[in-house]
Amino acid sequence: MKNYTYIPKMVCSRELSFSVENGKLYNVKFVGGCHGNLKAIGKLLEGTDARKAVEILKGNDCKGRGTSCADQLAIAVEKALEEEETN
Image (cartoon, rainbow, N blue to C red; front, side, top):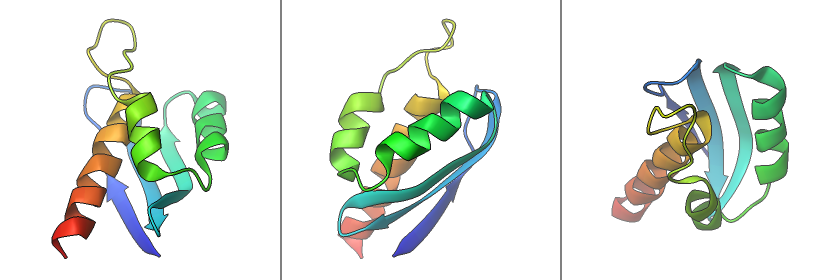
């Protein structure tokens, strides 16, 4: 299982982390932000296909920022998947 940490941009959370194993997401955690909502996102995504999670979350907007914590997670997961493909 490979672990990833990402510093999100333009959102309230200060850091997010997750693991990917066999194309599935695990251990999604956010530091900062709306704790209850972000904790729920982590629980909902546990064991989910990582590509499906990106499809669902990418482009989600928070208060007209053009991004959100969920969108930042999608961006981070997408980068992690690209990194795994090149290794």
